[in-house]
Each structure stands twice: as structure tokens, then as C-alpha cells.
Image (cartoon, rainbow, N blue to C red; front, side, top):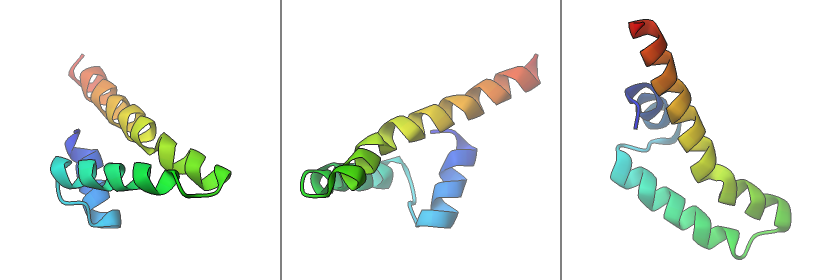
Length: 66
């Protein structure tokens, strides 16, 4: 995980590291099974959201290097 995203998650959500994030996402997936359709959609989309934000930060770093 990109250091900027990790720092933001630590600051905003109290997620300390990749292992803690994996646990949170796993718990979100379980909750999505019992949630209303809109909430289930949000919870199910979190891994993709984090992946996209992470790749955006990675691309930004590559652009800076160029």
C-alpha cells in the first residue's frame, strides 16, 4: 500500500497497517451480507476504492520521477 494512503487511513480510520486493513475489509464483506442493498454496495466496493486510490498515488509518484 502506498505510504500516503496508509498514512491517511491511519489518521482518519485508525487502521495501522496492511494486516489491519485486510481485517477491516474482511469484516466489511461479512457486514455487507446482512446490510441493506445500498450499504452492501458501499461495503463491497471498498477494496476496489482502496486499490484505485493506491494505484493513483503510485502513478503520481512515477510521474514525478519522470
